Image (cartoon, rainbow, N blue to C red; front, side, top):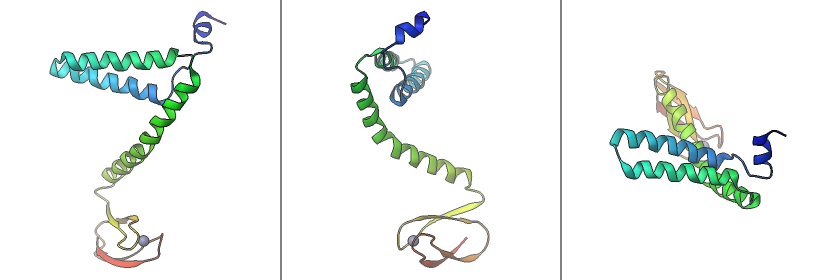
Amino acid sequence: MNGFKKFMYGRYGLDQLSIMLLAASIFFSLLALVFHSTILQLLTYILLGLAYLRGLSKNISKRQQENRSFLKVWQPVKIKLNKSFMRLKHIRTHQYYKCPQCGQSLRVPRGRGRIRITCPQCKNEFSKKS
Ligand SMILES: [Zn+2]
């Protein structure tokens, strides 16, 4: 075992929460540069320190629990962000509608005039201008 491996043995290491803390600290350090803000700079160090302490922690079950709680909040946000990103990506070629019956989000190509849309989830039919 080399020195670093030996040092990290039995320690928690990186998880999604720590990666998020690191990403946030990079984000805030950039903001701190732009706004010359000491408070933001301080926040950067706190986030970095937290990620560091979590990584070196030997209380693995506690850290896993923290990560699980984080993922419970983060997963739905991530899915929403991905959806918005996909919409933005297809905004020129596709139009989005919500099924009036079940609320399912539907994507249809733009520029086809008035079209009949069948919801794949509840089979409800409605017509829209695309
Ligand atoms: Zn529907």
